[in-house]
Length: 486
Image 1: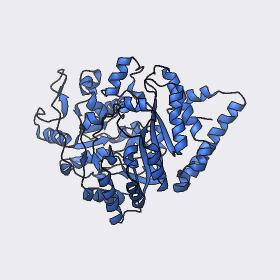
Image 2: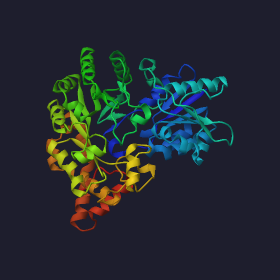
Image 3: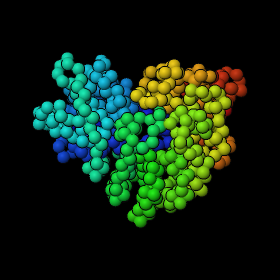
Image 4: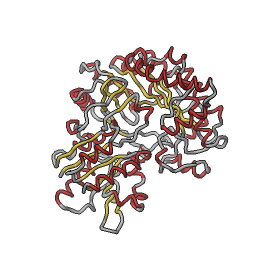
């Protein structure tokens, strides 16, 4: 059997300019079947003509795997069409197929999908491959959805319990067909996970629906070994994609010390973290700086207590100021997630997030828009309020407005958020951001790339040829929403 695993080619364009990572989950799946068959991973999200690439390589594969978040699902179906035309079976996995498995099983999409691996996929995928090789029944494979027979629809086996982390193999990076074009700023990057899951109950998040409110830790020895493997495969920067790495701050501090002891501080480390976790320990952040961390995406969400309560963070401390201070003192670039478009928001509430980012001198604020992801508690509450305005999941990327508030229309939420991005990256930001000092070459290249773009917009405004609304519509059409013109 030959298996091809494809990353989703659909990305958030604004983020892709800063970081593009190879898919860690697919490399992990490959590691669990590489003794059974020939398996390859194709990270096609960096290719311009990815459909042509897939058409060129797919022949000869028996099974093609596709992963998708909600905004990536439609394109996954297009790739499944290519795979089916080449004579392969298809297996879907990831957040959207997991959470919408029953709806998919009753929709016309099911004609393009032979199997759905739901939730944590390593063991389920291995058992599927074993059963296919042996010609055995699929009825006892937990976490699998499949066709019972022609014209009989899809059967959904019971869910699989979470795996023991000691049973999860290290990712197989050797099976990647595309090994270049992955970076953070201008340094080659790869991902290494140190834990899975989160115990907190944020209403907008799908993680609990995948893993339950559980937090499982890989051994620090395994993490160090995985970092070495990523470096051996060309990485100069490591991203830790853990769902909530700061749930156990003492462990993160021990990991930092292990990185130091292992002589791996020459690599550049990045992660996502909660503001409360980072703010809880200056000693931790100092150790992160010593270990080589130079970037943290900080979950701040909102300064508004009413919105924190709605988002399911009402009991979490709003320690953004302290967290950013600790990180900046260690020369760590700070990106923050700030969520607007919540039920009671008016224009002033949205701009409060802008003011907070400016006051904290955040290097890269991401002004997210509240998104009613399928099956989340937040979606149910927003639907009950009658605030969900759009169910086109291709727009469910956190940057597009798919709702209105009690005070603002969908377009007003989108436009105000666009304005915030347009105004943030100005001369004041040029003075204080840390990116220009840590990644001067990348920063200079971006300035050279964007200066003519902004100059044209300024000239068009001055001459009255175009309006800010014209630029807004242009960016909305292109999908690049984190830019504009002041």
